[in-house]
Amino acid sequence: MRVLGIESTAHTFGASVIDLAKEREGEKAILSDEKSAFSTEEGGMVPGEVADHHVEAFDRVIRDALAKAGVRLRDVDLVAYSKSPGLGHTLRVGAMAARSIALLANRPLVGVNHCIAHLEIARLVTDAKDPVLLYASGANTQIIAYEAGRYRIFGETLDMGAGNFLDQFARALGLGFPGGPRIDALAKEGDEKGFIELPYTVKGMDVSFGGLLTRLKHLIREGKRRREDLCYSVQETVFAMLLEVSERAMAHCDKDELVLGGGVACNGRLQEMAKAMCAERGARIFIPARPLLADNAAMIAYLGGVMHRAGISDSVRTAGIAPYERTDDVAVTWR
Ligand code: AMP
Ligand code: MG
Image 1 (cartoon, rainbow, N blue to C red):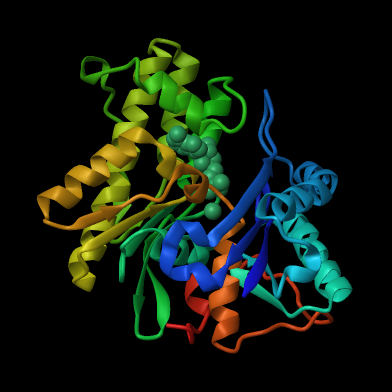
Image 2 (tube, rainbow, N blue to C red):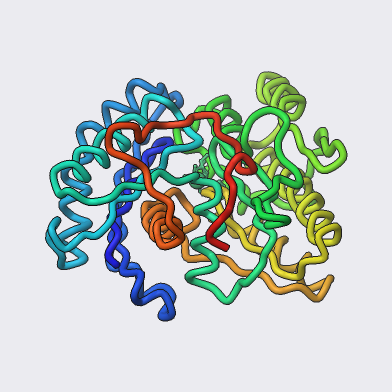
């Protein structure tokens, strides 16, 4: 079964074709995975502007995905799209594209939850069987694991996602969007000697970034600290918070696999710290390739295929979006 997947929850518009018949071959099942991401030199993301970007990009990205996979629309058996969670403006563009294609090609359609797709794709491309997922992206930061028929959220951010936090911090430093990679680069020029003690907020299994951001804005206004030291200290602090709750979730669920997901997981320092934590507790860590950590349509296509195989389908007329759907709202009938 060939699945065309469409991703549009936030700044990335993606399209991918996967061949579910090649599931056993892992990454080889992904025939193509194309994307176009919105970015700015200054300022952040305005939902309407990001949606305009997607409207401008969608046909090219979808055509590229089909061409790279070497398939025509009539070779596609199923259309999958990200229906949740995300920005209403951008989700609507992807859902419209998916519904139009399903209608034109007369193919079934399935809408999927983006957070769950981050975990499922790791089960396709790595040896992870039943992992805890540390999902740290722009809007989302959740620690997710499968328990009793659902993907449960064992910990999460109480305010903004780790990526949005990094982006806002970067904006305050005048670095543009997305800020994560720019902070990553600057942090490499900082070190322990310049470490600045920052608010470390872990509440039970949850984290929060608001107080930390306020403190950083204050420090930036004061202008006494090097940007490199600020970036270094932010990474050390925030990643320690994320890994503290991830480790506790692994202990609580008695799971010995950790998977990373989300754009923030592209960060080399986070990966290094996660590896160290897993090594200490004798757990295995799995880090999918960069394009699959960031938002991508391959994971949407894959999860759509797996769900459809289990009998789940949406109708073109009613297939909608659910910007606020939570990971544990979805009954997992395919596992
Ligand atoms: P996503 O929503 O999963 O596509 O992730 C986007 C977020 O990942 C943005 O907030 C980026 O700033 C962040 N990001 C991307 N690369 C890095 C990196 N190397 N280090 C930290 N954050 C990153
Ligand atoms: Mg994501």
